[in-house]
Image (cartoon, rainbow, N blue to C red; front, side, top):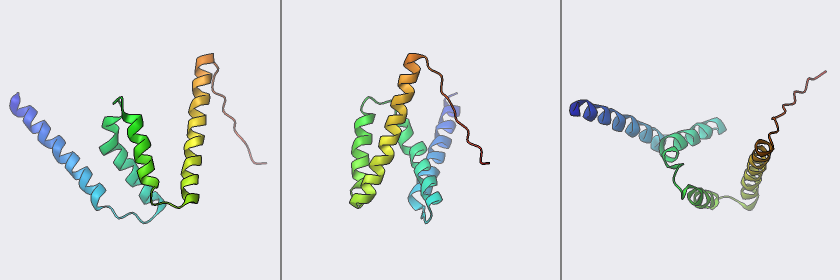
Length: 110
Protein backbone atom coordinates (compact mmCIF):
# COMPACT_ATOMS: atom_id res chain seq x y z
CA UNK A 1 0.00 0.00 0.00
CA UNK A 2 2.84 2.38 0.83
CA UNK A 3 4.39 1.66 -2.58
CA UNK A 4 1.10 2.50 -4.33
CA UNK A 5 0.87 5.78 -2.44
CA UNK A 6 4.46 6.54 -3.43
CA UNK A 7 3.71 5.85 -7.10
CA UNK A 8 0.54 7.97 -6.99
CA UNK A 9 2.46 10.84 -5.35
CA UNK A 10 5.21 10.59 -7.99
CA UNK A 11 2.63 10.74 -10.78
CA UNK A 12 0.97 13.76 -9.14
CA UNK A 13 4.36 15.45 -8.81
CA UNK A 14 5.15 14.71 -12.46
CA UNK A 15 1.80 16.08 -13.64
CA UNK A 16 2.22 19.21 -11.51
CA UNK A 17 5.78 19.58 -12.76
CA UNK A 18 4.65 19.34 -16.38
CA UNK A 19 1.88 21.86 -15.77
CA UNK A 20 4.34 24.30 -14.18
CA UNK A 21 6.80 23.74 -17.01
CA UNK A 22 4.06 24.53 -19.55
CA UNK A 23 3.26 27.75 -17.69
CA UNK A 24 6.87 28.87 -17.39
CA UNK A 25 7.80 28.07 -20.99
CA UNK A 26 4.64 29.44 -22.61
CA UNK A 27 5.01 32.33 -25.01
CA UNK A 28 1.50 33.76 -25.44
CA UNK A 29 0.99 36.09 -28.38
CA UNK A 30 -2.79 36.39 -28.68
CA UNK A 31 -5.61 37.23 -26.31
CA UNK A 32 -6.70 33.58 -26.45
CA UNK A 33 -3.17 32.48 -25.54
CA UNK A 34 -3.19 34.78 -22.52
CA UNK A 35 -6.63 33.50 -21.51
CA UNK A 36 -5.31 29.93 -21.64
CA UNK A 37 -2.24 30.95 -19.63
CA UNK A 38 -4.46 32.62 -17.03
CA UNK A 39 -6.58 29.48 -16.72
CA UNK A 40 -3.46 27.30 -16.38
CA UNK A 41 -2.04 29.55 -13.66
CA UNK A 42 -5.36 29.57 -11.83
CA UNK A 43 -5.89 25.81 -11.91
CA UNK A 44 -2.30 24.78 -11.26
CA UNK A 45 -0.97 27.37 -8.83
CA UNK A 46 -3.74 29.45 -7.32
CA UNK A 47 -6.81 27.18 -7.00
CA UNK A 48 -5.34 25.06 -4.18
CA UNK A 49 -5.18 28.19 -2.01
CA UNK A 50 -8.70 29.56 -2.51
CA UNK A 51 -10.01 28.15 0.76
CA UNK A 52 -7.30 29.89 2.82
CA UNK A 53 -8.64 32.65 5.08
CA UNK A 54 -6.02 35.04 3.70
CA UNK A 55 -6.87 34.37 0.06
CA UNK A 56 -8.72 37.68 -0.41
CA UNK A 57 -5.68 39.62 0.83
CA UNK A 58 -3.50 37.60 -1.55
CA UNK A 59 -5.76 38.41 -4.50
CA UNK A 60 -5.77 42.10 -3.60
CA UNK A 61 -1.97 42.25 -3.45
CA UNK A 62 -1.51 40.12 -6.57
CA UNK A 63 -3.91 42.39 -8.47
CA UNK A 64 -1.90 45.44 -7.45
CA UNK A 65 1.35 43.74 -8.44
CA UNK A 66 -0.07 42.64 -11.80
CA UNK A 67 -1.30 46.17 -12.57
CA UNK A 68 1.98 47.83 -11.61
CA UNK A 69 3.30 47.78 -15.19
CA UNK A 70 0.04 48.94 -16.79
CA UNK A 71 -0.85 52.45 -17.84
CA UNK A 72 -3.51 54.39 -15.94
CA UNK A 73 -6.07 53.68 -18.68
CA UNK A 74 -5.30 49.95 -18.63
CA UNK A 75 -5.52 49.90 -14.83
CA UNK A 76 -8.90 51.65 -14.93
CA UNK A 77 -10.13 49.06 -17.42
CA UNK A 78 -9.11 46.26 -15.03
CA UNK A 79 -10.75 48.14 -12.17
CA UNK A 80 -13.95 48.51 -14.18
CA UNK A 81 -14.04 44.79 -14.99
CA UNK A 82 -13.61 43.97 -11.30
CA UNK A 83 -16.34 46.45 -10.36
CA UNK A 84 -18.75 44.77 -12.79
CA UNK A 85 -17.87 41.38 -11.30
CA UNK A 86 -18.37 42.70 -7.77
CA UNK A 87 -21.72 44.28 -8.64
CA UNK A 88 -22.89 41.06 -10.31
CA UNK A 89 -21.90 38.97 -7.29
CA UNK A 90 -23.57 41.43 -4.94
CA UNK A 91 -26.82 41.29 -6.93
CA UNK A 92 -26.70 37.48 -7.00
CA UNK A 93 -26.23 37.42 -3.22
CA UNK A 94 -29.17 39.82 -2.73
CA UNK A 95 -31.36 37.75 -5.03
CA UNK A 96 -30.40 34.56 -3.22
CA UNK A 97 -31.09 36.11 0.18
CA UNK A 98 -34.51 37.32 -0.92
CA UNK A 99 -35.40 34.06 -2.65
CA UNK A 100 -35.64 35.77 -6.01
CA UNK A 101 -35.03 33.60 -9.05
CA UNK A 102 -32.49 34.61 -11.64
CA UNK A 103 -34.14 36.03 -14.74
CA UNK A 104 -32.53 35.51 -18.11
CA UNK A 105 -33.29 37.73 -21.03
CA UNK A 106 -32.93 36.58 -24.59
CA UNK A 107 -32.86 39.07 -27.41
CA UNK A 108 -33.79 37.99 -30.90
CA UNK A 109 -32.65 40.01 -33.88
CA UNK A 110 -35.58 40.69 -36.15
